[in-house]
Length: 192
Ligand SMILES: C[S@@+](CC[C@H](N)C(=O)[O-])C[C@H]1O[C@@H](n2cnc3c(N)ncnc32)[C@H](O)[C@@H]1O
Image (cartoon, rainbow, N blue to C red):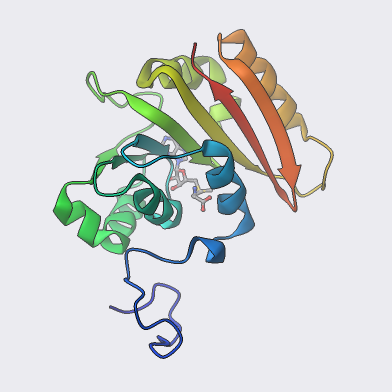
C-alpha cells in the first residue's frame, strides 16, 4: 500500500510494519499528547469528532485492539473518505464506523462510548453549549473526553483552553484538567 505522505516505503527499516498499525511514536505532537491523556484501553469504544484524514484514528484502532471499536464523525464527506481509505482493514473488520454530519446534529442513536476525542475542532469551544451536553450523553458514566487544541503561545493556557475548562465544568463534567506541551494543549474531563 502506498504511504499517505507520498514518501517512498522503507521495507528494510520496518519489515513487519502493517499499514494500519503505524508506530505511535511517529504521531505529530498534537496527536501524541491527546492519545496519552485519553487513556485508551483494549476493548474500548472510542468516538472521534472531526478526525480529518484519520491519522489519530489509526492509533486509536491500534490501542483498542480487535475487541474494541472506533466511530468517526465529521461534517466533511471528503475527510471521512480519506479516513476510511487510510484505515481500510479496520473498516472491513467492522471495527471502524463513520457518520457524516456536524457533531452538533448527528444522530448516533443510543450508541455510547468509553472515550470521546477531538483535535482542533473549534466548535467544541465556540459552540460548547450545544456540543458538550451531547458529548456527555455519548459517554458512559466515568468515560473520558480529551480535546486537543493548538497552543502557539507555548506553555501559557490559551483563552480557548480556559473557556473549554470552564464550559466542561459548567456542563457537569468532573476531573477537568488542562495541560500544554510543545505547541499543543489538551483538556480532559470525565463524565459523572
Ligand atoms: C482542523 S481539522 C482537524 C483534523 C484533525 N483532527 C487534525 O487535528 O489534524 C477539523 C476537522 O473537523 C471537522 N469539523 C469541523 N467542525 C465540525 C463539526 N462541527 N462537526 C463535525 N466535524 C467538524 C472538519 O471537517 C475537519 O475534518
